[in-house]
Image 1 (tube, rainbow, N blue to C red):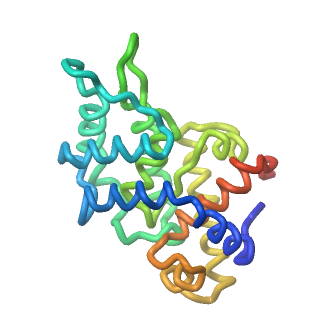
Image 2 (spheres, rainbow, N blue to C red):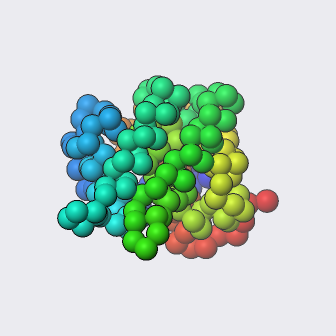
Length: 217
C-alpha cells in the first residue's frame, strides 16, 4: 500500500471534500497562534476541544470536578517540551535519535490522565498521536486504532516509532519521485501549506480506516 505520487494525489483530492477536519484545524491554529504552548491553559483547552472534534471523546469536567486533562497535559508538557523536534523539522528529515525520542514521548503522553468518571482514564494512543501531530504538524503523523493495528500490530511506543519510520521512508520516496521539496510538492498537489505528514495520514485513513486495507507485510 506504499503510496506513489498518483495515489497520494488522489487521496488528498478526495480528502479535501471533508470540511470538518480543516475547519477544526483552523480553529485550533487561530486559538494557539503563533504556536501551541501548553504551558498556557487557554492552549490546553483549545487542544482538548480540537481532539474531541477529531473524534477522541475526552470528557470535559463538570463544575467542581478536577481538570484531569488540563493538569495531566500541563505536566507532560513540562517534562517533554524541550525534547520535541523544532517546529520546522520535516518528517523526511527526522533523525533516528529524534524518532526514538518521539516514541518515548508518545508512550508517556498516552498514559497521561485525561478524564475521570468512576476511574481515571488515560489519554490513549489515538489521542496522543493526534496531539503530537497538532504540536508538530510538519514532523509526525497521527494515527487511529485501525491504522496502528493494521500497519504495526500494536499501539504502544514501539509501534508509534515504527509508524514514524514508515512515514519517513514514504516521505523520502515521494520527494525523490517528485524531484522537488516538500512545500513545492504540497503546492503541486493543490494543498499549499499542508505537510507530507498530514497528506500521508489522509492516504492512510482512506486506504486503511475507511476501506479496510490489509496489513502491510
